[in-house]
Structure formats: C-alpha cells, structure tokens
Length: 130
Image (cartoon, rainbow, N blue to C red; front, top):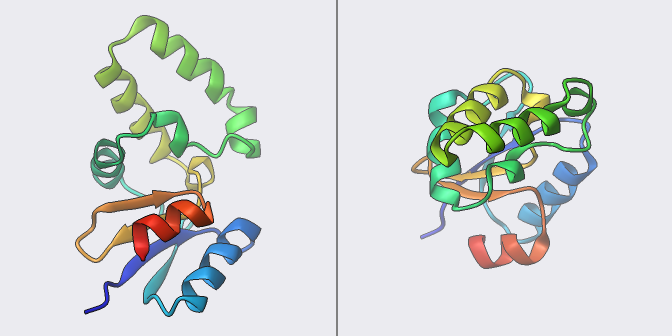
C-alpha cells in the first residue's frame, strides 16, 4: 500500500520543482500545497518541529529576503542566549507561522499529518519516502 504525502512548496522555487519531479519519477502520490497561500499553522509547525528532532533553524529559509530583512538570524541568536530550548522553539514556530516565505521548502508531510522531510536532499528523501 502506497502512502500519500502533502508537499508544501512555493510555485516558483526551483528546489521544490526538483522535489516534485523526484516524487513523480518514483511514482509517489502527493498533494501540492502552497506554502504562501496556505502557510503552515503554529499547531502544524509545533508538531513537525518536535517530530523532526532537527534544529529549529533547519525550518527557516535562511537565503530568503524575508529572513534577511527581518534579521531573523539575530533574533534566533538572541533567543538562544536568553531563553530555554523550549521557549526558543515556541518563539520560532510563532515567527515561522507568520509568513510562508520564512519557511524552508519543500516540507513533506505524510497522510497522517506527520513530519517527513524539510528541504530537498535526494538522499534524505530516498531514505524517508522509499
């Protein structure tokens, strides 16, 4: 039985296009979701970041204009100096939920709504989805 995924993407993102092409090549069912029009919610991001066991920083699009213009790196650095790890994650999730352009993409979520992958690295997707 095959699993279906939801893939949160930006329509013009070349990395997202590569990820979708990879899914198509491997006959993996997915539903495309705009990370701009349907930005992940705080509840979704809270769940996914916790399930991922990744640094919260992995969920940020660090090369994006919104990230740079809002000085998010400085905010994260400040939070990490002054808050507990739980508080940093909570603050970061709140910030990520404000703008889909802050989120690293694509995000792959399984049919049950659980985190699978962030960003597209073929080896990671192969390990997680095949």
